[in-house]
Length: 205
Image (cartoon, rainbow, N blue to C red):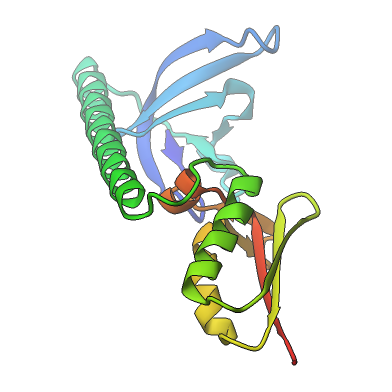
């Protein structure tokens, strides 16, 4: 088979190594595909298309007029096992790095509350701003579903405040796709709280 790929995943060739019934949809079947680079794809068998039906990216999996040998299947399974082991090692390394970063943050900011919710984030923002800009009165309010609005007058400029509060954003909104994307690597927000949107507004005196 040939996987035609998409914007996030490169195309590749491989083979169907097994077919099983789909318990969530009686009468349908799912085929297990392994590509030469070790990627594994579970794909509804009814959505397979013959390569003669190739039409740009309309079909995700194209069936080629080729059969693979037992040796080829063994190589595909070995590639899948290697890729699985590599991904597991990366996941473990990422977990260890995350834990080390979190430990450093907890040691560096013992005066902050620990939690991953928006209320904890708002309280910690107040604490950090009070320490950074004593004498300046900040309004830190939770508004709507996952938004924190920060307002103040006089004192620091927008960039100075944003340097402190930006760490509490859970991700970003992409206007091109009209989607919000979470930052899975934001250890700060996971440790000291976060919100999808954090807005800062410096009002005139």
